[in-house]
Length: 114
Length: 116
View 1: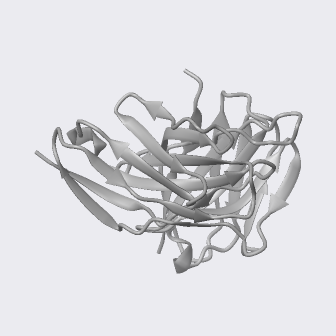
View 2 (view 1 turned 90 degrees about the vertical axis):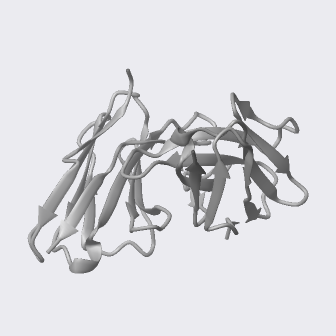
């Protein structure tokens, strides 16, 4: 069974600084998808970024980028120029190529200090 | 804008009193999911529909049922809610391709259920 681990329950960052959230996963599959979702307090879970395992190039979305290390089974999220609106719970998630199930990590609560 | 809508956003019910939560989508996705998320925890998949094909997770209690009358709507029925069912319930949708792979899941805003 696949597992996803987020080792940082809480992180904080100063506004305009850069922060990296860690995620590791365990799988025997070679083809799969990885996601970072953001869930602000009492608000909707939204997709931040998606990575296909067969792609070597790291995905980027504006200020958000990932460092995907397939051999190490690591998938960290870097947020550049942090903004107050980035404060949220961030979930790393895994989905295999054939399945419907998302396996979530335990989440990292990010606080942004003004 | 295409979206996933959940109603109601907040629901209070009494112990043992049946409750139904609603999800609708305008994305025309063929897969719909229900997740339970307890405070400060990750979402936990309860079940999903691929078109009309229902797929239950092995550890989902029998107390939880679902209906999908058409592509756009999916309901979560809790037959006899217990105090432990207090949680956020998230609906999500995705598209499954002809090759069988499911694409990105998009979430609704959730229904916060309180069982008293």
